[in-house]
Length: 443
Image 1 (cartoon, rainbow, N blue to C red):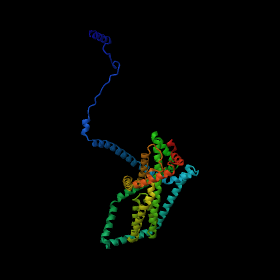
Image 2 (tube, rainbow, N blue to C red):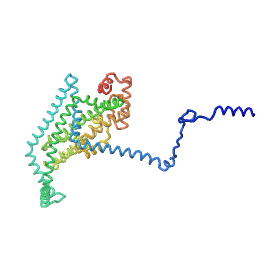
Image 3 (cartoon, rainbow, N blue to C red):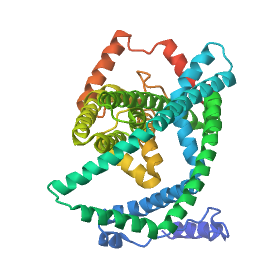
Image 4 (cartoon, rainbow, N blue to C red):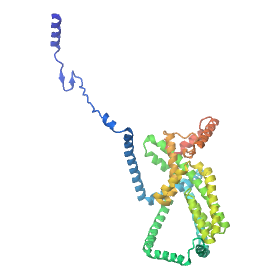
């Protein structure tokens, strides 16, 4: 035992204590253990729901702030933003014609210029006809309006309201007094109207200039914008824009057709009843129909008011019935049959979009609200279902799918049957066409 103890002692003396240097023990890195304070008690004090709500709250605040800043910038640039939006809608209407001319061998610039000039001639020709009709019928209209006012005054005196002539005269004098007292405000309004007229003229030339280049270089402009994105996002965004553009074209075509049917239906009723300004009122109905649900109703109410003032309550009642019948035809036949194939938006979404657009940007906001919603709907649906940028199986924009689940199931079954008939694979021509839509961005 003594020998073994002596041997261990000698071995320990020969080995010596373990060296210590700056790098640690025995040349090995020293490991430092950091102990985090236990905060589980603090987390338990705040419920999980409050934590999630707080996390969402500051993100929503940032999102709302970003949207507010964007709207402020747009409001400062309305003179530029509104003409661009109008040019986009007109380009969606005219671009198929320019593309058809280009396919027949015509140069891009010549095709865009020819389509633009043809559109201008059609628009100004129609406006000239409307103005001529209004001027030619103005004297008769003034006479009929005076007679209508006398009839209204007589009805107010003898009808259930029992408003005497003296009281009616007092109301007229009070209105004239209000006009006299607010002459300064009217003068300021006239100056404001002159300024607005200058903005309208500037916006018109900006619309024409922008529309020409949209018709000529629209695909190249979109390709350039897609190249500014990170490489993984180029193909998905390019194809989402491709489908959104086709949705916008379908929407504008459907809207023009629905507006034409509304204008023809109400215009025929105005002509049959010999209501003055039938053509201008029909044109007003046509323009008003570009604001879904609201526009045609308001313009129809104007037609009813003109019939009431010029021809009395019986004619106004008949025009009202015609307007209601046309609205029912639009709501139950044209909208589901024509517009339902262009965009798949819930009626509540349409109403809220129009209301928001009118509150935000007036009539122009109501005009562009629904097409903007349709374009965003198509882009979001496509990017959600095809994040890598592959084409849709049926080569149709996702935004045209029905919003009703039952209709969506029917569409899905029909798509499955069509795919079974075609062998389950898209044709080469469709694939080539989809790839050639945005060639540079796809590459």
